[in-house]
Image (cartoon, rainbow, N blue to C red; front, side, top):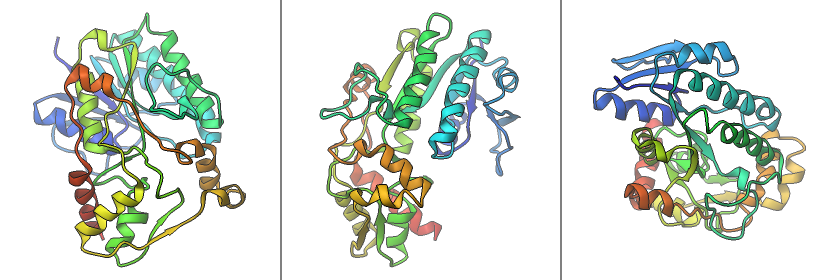
Length: 310
């Protein structure tokens, strides 16, 4: 059977995966509500609202593999409906056509931890977003006898073209313009970050994997953990500018969150920032021989891309 991959969501990760698949001659379809502003030659687009079961079923028709790489506004009020509906729609559609699914997931559902996050840790309901994603996880796990589904759990990510990142426009972009970098999270607590091109490579690795890689979760490999300040310093050196940093103390977030929905949502997952946030991805690295990009490569590339973007 000819391999056809449907990528649901053409954001940074979806676009990078499409590039990899196209470069090796893959049959790739982009499924999202609007046609991408620039659709690369060789890509097909089909309109698809992930909250519409019929639209998802139509989008994956004929697919052998599906990458679910969607994002929703960073608001638990949206997530509460959007995530379970999306997972249910994708599960049912892919079960009907027999397609394998790789889902770009995150790690909120593991809740507060004091040790590296592993795939075998119990799911948590500590916080709105953790509870929502725990419920969404339960949906696909309950369907493992009907659909081959694998989740790639990723921490915060960064990289060229990544806008919604703590290592993005508000930090490297600001430094490139001669301004102070701004963070709303502690800069001196070690925190795992995944490089977007690495996530794309890992997603393709799972799409290519044998059936036994499905029905389970995989943690995304990251470079050796550092603090945000250390990473910002790497970027400042690459930009040849001094590191100037303004930080909103974590303890102020509940008050500021009364006036800012985004800040309120960050406070909901404060357990990812108030202690070292490490990820154990030895399972993925051992199985697939995967080596993550070092920060010494990824951070300068990211900082320079933001400088070039103006």
